[in-house]
Image (cartoon, rainbow, N blue to C red; front, side, top):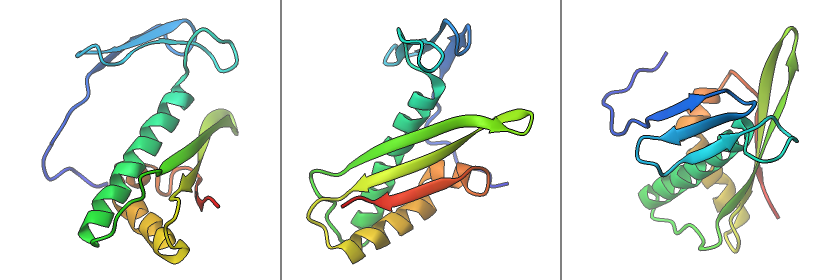
Amino acid sequence: MNTLDKVVYTAHVHTNGGRENGHARSDDDHLDVRLTTPGKGGGTNPEQLFAAGYSACFIGAMKAVAARQHLQVPEGVGIDAEVDLGPVGQAFGVAVRLNIHLPGMDRAAAQKLIDDAHQVCPYSNATRGNIPVTLTLAD
């Protein structure tokens, strides 16, 4: 297990009710969402929140890596994130697909940036070896 050298930020969120008729709110009120089961409507679900968090974090990792390598991340950078939920034996699990858009960037340089970012992204490090994660450089 990797431990943090130091804490640079701590998120504080209180959740009640869980994924069915639940609610989650951060201590700074920037996150304030109603939770529902997938497909029910009227709120978001943990898989959508995970997709948003992972994709935002991965873009940040690409920008950090690009800065170190003296590269420019294109203005139109974006990720279409997909998080699957399904049974794994008697439990449940998730799988992630990140379809990464780096418009106008040389494909070889873009793929290297993605591969390098995957090594430093906190979400990638947290999920590595635990769940399937597929990274695809979109056309």
